[in-house]
Amino acid sequence: MTEKRKVLIVDDAEVMRKEVATLLKDKYETYEAEDGLQALEQVRKVVPDMIILDLEMPVMGGFEFLDKVDEILDPIPPVLILTTISTKRRETREKGAQFYMDKPFDKERLLTVVEHLLKSESTRPN
Image 1 (cartoon, rainbow, N blue to C red):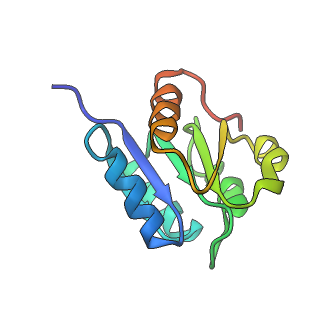
Image 2 (cartoon, rainbow, N blue to C red):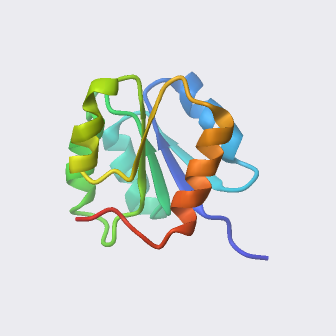
């Protein structure tokens, strides 16, 4: 049996984190963090294969997390931005996120995007 790929879900909204984790748990090993600081701790412990990231969070937001994760991981896994801030699409690309989805999200589309990003060999540019 092959080992499940690891997906870190970072969102300060517990309901959103749990919804994404529940959606992914059959196919992937999921980990959760409620802000960027907790996410950095998780990254050090589990070295995820992919990160699903909200942008606006207390303590440390998504953009600051993206800057700091560069110092921890090489190569950096694919990053999917899942947020309500639709005006930040260009900035997320500049920070190296591979994909951007607005909340609320379509469940089937999220599953397809996660599968595609994990199958591709590309990682986030550092």
